[in-house]
Image (cartoon, rainbow over the protein chains, first blue to last red):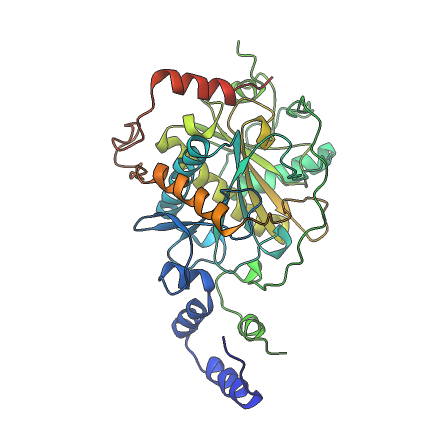
Length: 223
Length: 174
């Protein structure tokens, strides 16, 4: 986007403030680089395309063949996506992962989604990363193991179970042994080099249903 | 009795803190998770890797995962969530039973799912693109609700031997 004068920026900010929620959504879409890729206005190396999703090669790949799988509709985070689209998205991911294993020299794949800046989300358009893996490829995803006491397990577990509509009848197990998966046989790969600075801004996931004017103005570089 | 630890959790012979359960799917709290509230979601049937999970079950698994992610946002005060899947040992898979991790996130929580980007030449990118496209031209995503458990007709034809080798290669898991 071309640089704007302060006057133009002010005018734009005024305009944004007067927009209806629908107009704002439309405006956000126009600012989204991935929506422009979906629309064909920005070039990308497309490897799959259907009525709901599009898959492109990541230009900053974790490994060669790293695919970004996007919904054509603009969603900021996964909880906004309806069930049928979730089904379609992940069935496409399954087949693309399969394609990676069969066409390029990969020994496994990771599928990663990030919701929110704290989770490493960099773009405002929800996407899945499908990453080809090889032994000793230098990727060091770190998942620490944090233990919880029984009170914490019960409190968190019951909260989630209630939210997910699970009946509370399994309370007889008061002491839970650790159903932890065994440690990998091979040593962990070395930690990754310092991670890239995250410069893009995205929506605060806690405000998933509203569009924040501050976010939009920050995208536009407004202080 | 199955030696698979995840099958034993599904069967109830290893107790767990369940957060969601239906006929085919179970979601439990990982008591040694990456963050408190880390859940894993898996099919009750034993499938080592994602490619083996039938479409109808896979669709449901991720729909449940999305609901778990929403429940984590709304009830645990998480600032974000990650959905994380490992297929194969080189990808970090440690148990030969397909599972989806849903991880609550906060700033500076010690979890790292980032990477340093690799620099590829334009030629390398194009080579990968062509190889992948050649494979994905046969991909067709079916509506799982209408035709559950019927394999997609347009799926890539793979010989039995190739399939065997492929599964064995990915299945080299304790």
